[in-house]
Image (tube, rainbow, N blue to C red; front, side, top):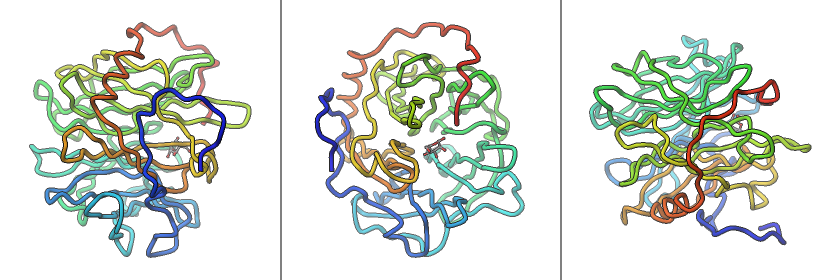
Amino acid sequence: MTLPGRKRSPVLFHRTDDNPILSAAHWPYPANSVFNAGATRLQDGTTLLLCRVEDFRGLSHLTAARSRDGVSAWQIDPEPTLSPHPDHPEEEWGIEDPRITWLPEEGRYGVLYTAYCRNGPGVALALTEDFRTFERRGLIFPPEDKDAALFPRRFDGQWAAIHRPVTHVSANMNLSYSENLRHFGDTRTILEARQGAWWDANKVGMSAPPIETPEGWLVIYHGVKRTGSGVLYRNGLALFDLERPDQLIRRSDPWCFGPRDLAERVGDVNNVVFPCGTTLQDDGDTLNVYYGQADTSIGLAHASIRQLLAWLRENSSVPEAAPAPTSDAVPAD
Ligand code: BMA
């Protein structure tokens, strides 16, 4: 169901009629909510979603769901696929929001996820060949940090990851480099939250992992707007240099994907669309964008990379140095 009466800019993200494609109602074991799934296509073409599942204590774990067409007939693991591990105190309060990257050099997938504990949320890395067994590498970015994904290849010998540390004055997207996928450094801020009334004021973070295009790395990122009735999670686009992924080429001024349907407007956390993964269809242009709906269920929308790039060209501002943050810029959540 769509809320009536609002004129919209061109639709770039086409929601399927089948939404929600996955929810707690589909789950093989009791779950409060299923949302914010990482996504990839396995070598045989199967779509794999690594779903964030919140249990009735409020803690999250990750469970894999597989489908031939990426839309229906999901085979869901009968038990949690990756649970908080007792040897990892950084996961004490659960693990959340995985982003998956296939790493050809490793012959494995790199999964960055939020590990949540009493010190706050941090970013942890697990490597896997099959989403059945995982090599956990623990925290790579300590709290407070989240919204992280690896790039699929090295740049000048260095791996790279986007992440979003939070300090008492800022919550901006950063990029860090690593020689060994264990220790990350050479950190730079790559995209800053805007201020004031902007849709992406105060707090931004990467949504789905970077997508390689002829024009650069296309990144769907979210902005968090605080309003009198809570926060609004919307998504815009940014493009980064193919060989220097810490160099911003352009970012969109408007958002292009925000809460619209009832399931996105109303849920455990209202007014949230939160993509954590995309897959590419066989035509090489159509993205399947998997997104959390109001922290409750998983939706699917299709988008054309060509159209996203064209829209971004027409709706972007030239990057500029942001003004120094003020105490108003302290993130709310
Ligand atoms: C963010 C993350 C997401 C969540 C969103 C809206 O900070 O924690 O997992 O979907 O808030 O609640």
